[in-house]
Amino acid sequence: MTAYRFFTSLAHPVALRLPPETAHRLTVRTLSILPPPHPDADDPRLAVNVLGLDFPNPLGLAAGFDKNGEAVDAVLRLGFGFTEVGTVTPHPQPGNPRPRLFRLRHDRAVINRYGFNSAGSAMVHRRLAARTATQGLVAVNIGANKNSEDRIGDYVAGIATFADVADIFVVNISSPNTPGLRDLQRRQDLNDLLEAVLAARDAAPRRVPLVVKIAPDLTLDELDSIIEVCQARRIDGLAISNTTLSRPENLVDHEIAKQHGGLSGRPLFHLSTWLLAQAYLRAEGAFALIGIGGIEDAATAFAKIEAGADLIELYSALVYKGAGLVANIKDGLVQHLNAAGFDRLAAARGRTATDWAAGKITTADIQFRKLV
Image (tube, rainbow, N blue to C red; front, top):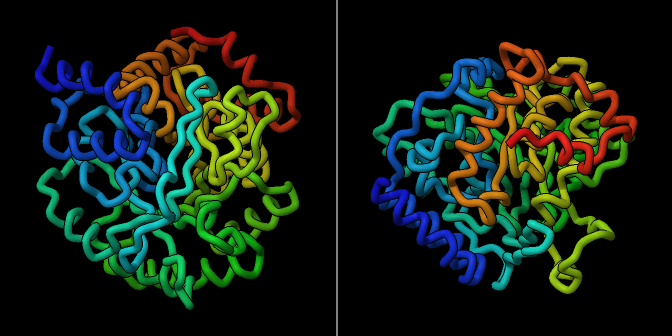
């Protein structure tokens, strides 16, 4: 056992006993000073070519973990195919008061109301520009400052700042913890935003694919409007989804569930996957899709791909299962490919989207299909 694996085998149980935000900071700090060894090469069947980029595997670390770009290369060495930094705001801001992160242990879920706590774009850019590693894909998730008088201007500033270091831009208009931010998902507001950020992107020396991250709490009419605008503006991808303000009736940790903020983890899986399938059927291949929400093993990861995802991201499950989850999911994806008789992940993409959209598949169905 390497020193890193020995340390993490001890640290993970300890972290679960610490206050959630303290544990989060400790984990990021540990990765920044004690990076893991390089992972084994991925099975070539897991490779994905999308957004004009080559991913060694489809699994990414979602935004919210490495908010300020402190552990990018260490995260990639955990075995992720890519990692997402942020959300980053133009100016530093503290976010909402503590406590603002809560574990729902029995539900394998998390509620956060961080509110875009950020070191600011200048600091994050310096860290990304100082990277010595040349491998690994990095998405930068950009947002607006809470008290900004020009939110569109904040997103444009983010594009201009990170154009030389980002492999992917993720435009976050769906956090529930910044008042009024989700209004940018409305048709005219979204159109105006995309017009501005795409112009900034296209004016940069290098073309970086641009993805829009949306909320899971949308009506189908709202989803239709978003997709129509995104198709018209020819964005590169849609990320589905952010955290939810809803609270499923079957949550066990009732008292903690009363906390304000966005819910992620296992309870988000069905809602986010249903919306992903709806988007897959509506977009008709116009742009790539990133599936996020409730991925906790190979079965849920493969289900996202079958529902229409090109790429997938996780975060909350790491809280409960630790860093070994990354390798377990990749190994399990290979087993699912073998069982289905596919030679690549793209062959499975979207094959259950119609059933998901029609409500014919449930989370329970996925649990019965587990191979690992």
